[in-house]
Figure 1 (tube, rainbow, N blue to C red):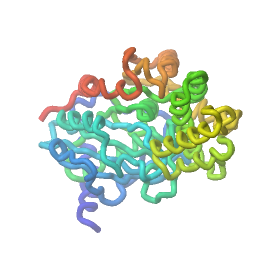
Figure 2: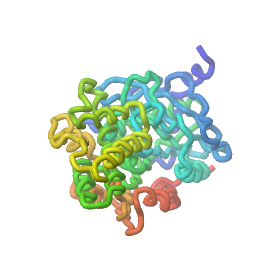
Figure 3: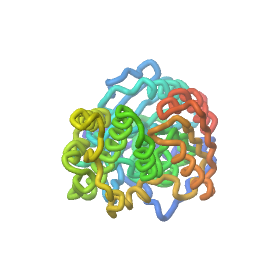
Figure 4: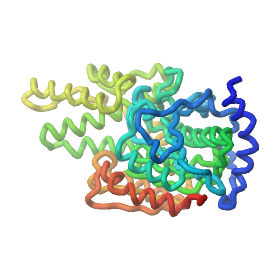
Length: 413
């Protein structure tokens, strides 16, 4: 047996027990019968490999890609990958606390996984101060995205799948660090943007799976009410100039294609032609190989080509099938499987949302917040008339870091 793996096996149980009793962990884990607990033995698969796409060495003692066991949306064990960043310096009294970062949309193809690419500059600008403040950062790719076998499609915007990707990555990260003799606190929280904002709310709902001490959630422009977003997005550009129409339609069709690809995780016989008209269904099928930006460009290029041959218009352009949202598999996904905060969330939630957001419009997040508050969730809702989908995150990085420090102060040395 490899000596590093042997060390993990011998040390993890005793160190994890020690970490579970630090002085700041004053909230007990409360099991929920409807949520399966993570009881995987040896949740880390193989030895983590160094993450070298971006240099975090000034603030991180270790940057690694972790392969771990998680509960897939089919109810069976599957493998997933996550980035793991460990602060420099000695382990503080009481152990490191963990911040899980839930990333925004990249695509469903393995090549789009954050662990296989350089880290976005603005994401770096959040991770670096968190590390400097003494937090471990765990950043899962999500189920099916970058997973080792290359056979599983990412269940795009499936709340439970995203949530289990996060909870199980946190459990695996603690196990791995404990195997190195490092004390890790039981406290953790989640931060996410866009798809990741939705995933962060999912982690809040399913946090009991980790059997730890969950402290709260920060969600920026979280995806929700997807059918409304699709309908309102189409309506918003009905009388707009061609360029504006193409930009919106390409964005909406890209997300619809990614949703279709994700539904094929459990239903591989589900066809793109059920959702898209021909020949646009052929473009949509590229969702399984292209990342979201390239896929969007292909949708847009096809529309512009059509318009150039049709009096500079898109009349009768073959986009989505008129009734695709009533297809049972799609309907269930839109109404249930993709909708976060359908139950009361027991820990504090902060949501940032911009009025100028055309990707996740404020109206959708208004409805999400109202729904969550009606369930009894404690939501701090922060909006700004000038923020769009990107700047709601970028202009609040410092605030988000402070939100983490307030909700879950780092242990001191």
